[in-house]
Image (cartoon, rainbow, N blue to C red; front, top):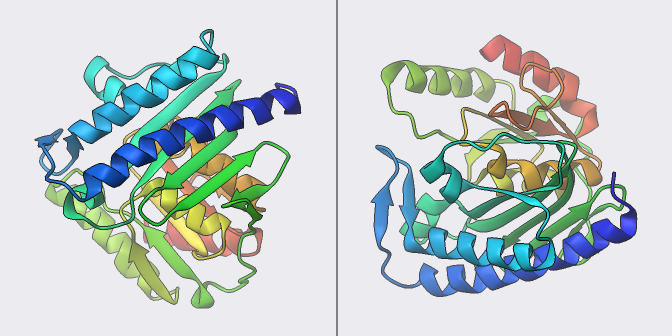
Length: 270
């Protein structure tokens, strides 16, 4: 693992990149978007592409020996295998559908993995001016102030967040809605925010108590949020209860007090 001084330097550069990309998002948010379809539902805009180029160029200037994985380049060129090398994993706009519709849950997500473990996370929502940051072993922060997960200890008092996924075949939709229907009986309420990264940050700052998502796009959705959740005192894991795997396209997160009950509820709803 890199020394803490190095992680601090990585974080500073990542924040700079996120804020520069955030300016592009803020400007584009209030303008007419030029939208392309990556599938029947999933969208990409010229702002997504411009932000990814900006972020990668900025990071490569500072860390030319590092590896890079981004949602838009990966979508175009195929999945990049994650190695043990320091690897920047970027979602230039997490919440593109929100961005297109003018819904303000939109963010830049920049994570760094070393030996496949997330060690630096930056999630920046430029519309709401919220910057979530964390480095391994140093706590998690929102706009510079320390954040912690909630202290809820019973599912019935918990707010749960999940997301829909781009696939629209009947079997997938039935599985998604049946699971939500089952969980609704056990929690206070359910939300869909449209951004996996912001959902994880919601866990980290205690706005959300439970989060799960299966079938999302790739590690760019979770690389930054995973370290932010962990550093805020939360737990991140596979919905089955197994250890979190950044490449598995499945994630769940909560505070430690409700993890076991949440895993049981997820297993019963599957």
